Length: 95
Image (cartoon, rainbow, N blue to C red; front, side):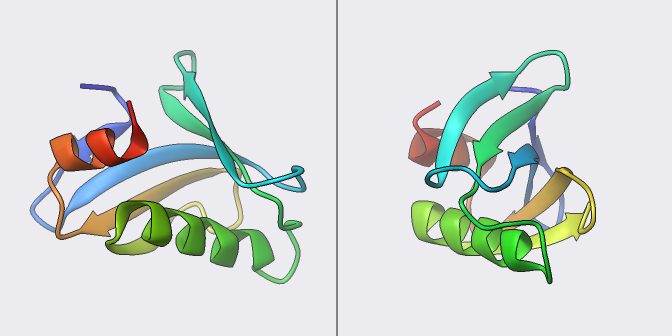
């Protein structure tokens, strides 16, 4: 299991590194150096647009409740996914 996925009592923590202003929303792979999942998001990092897009993208992809629990103003964000196991999250992400 990747370093970027952690089971907690509240749900699964997904550690991501976001690159805003991309052509489209896409998971680019794992950044081994940072221990985070690399994600490109089309929205710009202004007025919380990129954060909203991250939540929307992962909610749709995983079919689960997703929230940002750390890193609202950073490119490195921790997402909390409720209702899925770490294994299910990895499977749905195709990892």
